[in-house]
Image (tube, rainbow, N blue to C red; front, side):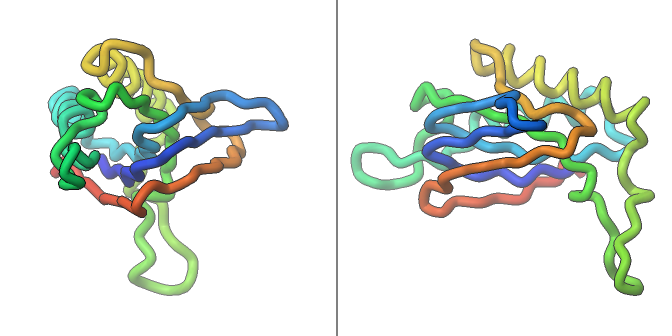
Length: 147
């Protein structure tokens, strides 16, 4: 599992002109799933995201979590995070889980984040052509792998 985490002031996902998920201050999480991902990977990543201290405290030091600042989380599935572009000019996506595997992983991950955060996470729409808009805060962007 690989995620790109962006600290945002706001973010939203639109599919065919309708907003499927929208948040204020918090984290935009782009998430890619591998066929070998396990419930333990999902749990580790969800806990990491909710507890990672990347929000500023009163002294301006990144010392607070999204949970501490009562922020929101928007999770967007993105299989292209598992692309292999080392050879040639066309990336290979064989490292990404196929939809029958990835969809339940995505759903479980979103549920786990909501459980840990104490409120539902906003989402995109799995497999859709999504437009993602965000106002990056910092900017703070972090890449995490569950392995």
